Image (tube, rainbow, N blue to C red; front, side, top):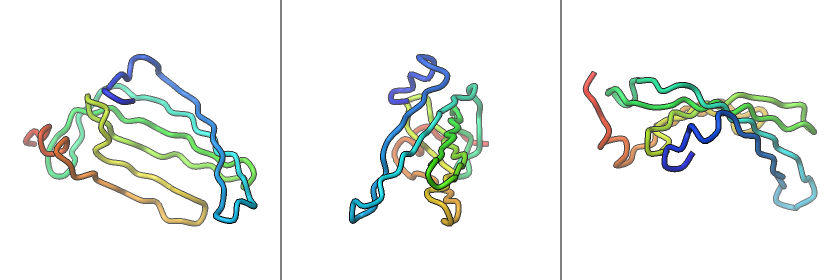
Length: 108
């Protein structure tokens, strides 16, 4: 999604291996990303023009599946996310404070 090239593909699938510290338990992690239409959402008290990216993420060996969400500006920079990182962990809501967030701010 770098540089905002969202229209090059509407969905993308990725597979990788997760390994614990001892290297004893390799797990497959699978993701499918879906890009939504452009929209305007409030982030950090201002409106921003973004695309929402939904990540359907699962680890087959654990029978665990979640959907994570990312709000990405037209330059491909993630401004906000809502994620589940691992089974049993609480969902994480993050606003990424950066020059991209400040420089693209529009008043509500």
